[in-house]
Amino acid sequence: MFPVMEVVVEHQAARVALQSPVRARRVCKICAGPGIVVLHQIRGTAYYYCASCDFLQNFHLEDQRGAGATPQEENDEARARLWSAGDQAAMQTKGWEILGLMSSPLAWTSRSVHAALKKIPAYDQWYKDRARKKFRRLLDFGCGHGVIVFELRKKGFDCTGLDPFSPVLDPHIYRTPLLEMRFPEEAYDGIFSIETMEHIPNVIETYQELHRILRPGGMLLVQTRRLEDPDYQNEREQWFYLQEPATHVSVYSETSMRRIAAKTGFRSVRFRGVKFARFEK
Image (cartoon, rainbow, N blue to C red; front, side):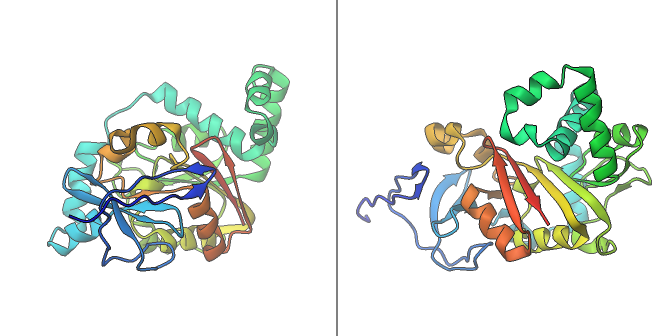
């Protein structure tokens, strides 16, 4: 048996107590460094931790592809398993929440003030009009059924969705992987991604491509749970994000997102709570 070792990571608070770490033969998906260790074992899948990037990752998808599964087979299985019909009204509300986060400065300085002001018709109309002017061309990256796409199109936005796992056949929904789409450079004013980035194995390549297809001054808004989440701090292996190791392959932190922004050309990244990050080009 290896002796018990404690690894203390300073990032707002001490995070991990690690017993019997296993030195990995993998390299970090962000920094490509080899010094990553197995931090969690969930349902037979190892989650590797990079202390330099403060990033948690597994290699399930890479290993599955190596075992011979084709992307089409994986997509067909994922469509059936991951995308139920969902709550259409909730997703429509989410679309306007996303636009508020993209277009209103108050949404980042005071959540409570922004939420209160949204009840005032003049403010509600102001941030929606501001969004229409600033983010006419929008991409929903990981759009699922495309409910937000269709809602925003009805409101006058040139919004398209991309999701290889989407079950929807529609000219405004692309079911091709991002790196195979070959969008024109600077094709979009804004991109948003709701509960998608945790499913992405090729992290740097994906953010590089999203940066490429954004216009200068454009914005990428990401919603994904981060390691700062108190639920992770308290629950560890029982945290709900880690209960889907076959699909939740990349779990970020503020540090790892700053590393990504620096490596992929974004000029800044800001955070709100433990799940929203705003990358600006």
